[in-house]
Image 1 (cartoon, rainbow, N blue to C red):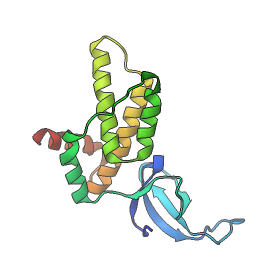
Image 2 (image 1 turned 180 degrees about the vertical axis):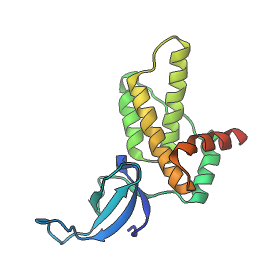
Image 3 (image 1 turned 60 degrees about the vertical axis):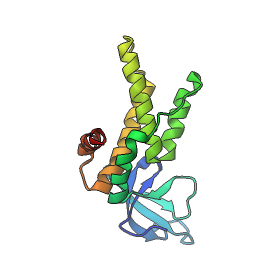
Image 4 (image 1 turned 30 degrees about the vertical axis):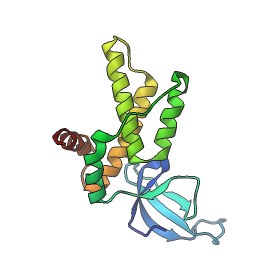
Length: 167
């Protein structure tokens, strides 16, 4: 169970801060279940309610600062995804994003980056699917790292790049 004030990953909503735990305080809703009330860090004017025992959506604690630093050091060792069937590429992208796991997101980012570079070198356009999932993966990964490292999300990409290049 998480505590009030914790930052967690909550599925596709990304990083959320838990602001309350208790029964729903809405008319017509039974008071026999406990809910997390969460505020997404990167979605303005939004509040999310979910049962504390929700198993349908990924909920996990955000990495600590030390875990984030160790993770960044390991990025160069993370391999690209192996996409065997081209027709299932977008499905594989979607499944990777739904894991909400930093290692999988880095694999996805590396895979799509390489594919985009190859397509551009061949004189082809970047596909909308590649652009979409590249953006989603970056937003999710950098959003978590920003909270863990106490940085602005916009600063994280350059910070990670610099750390990875130094090795």
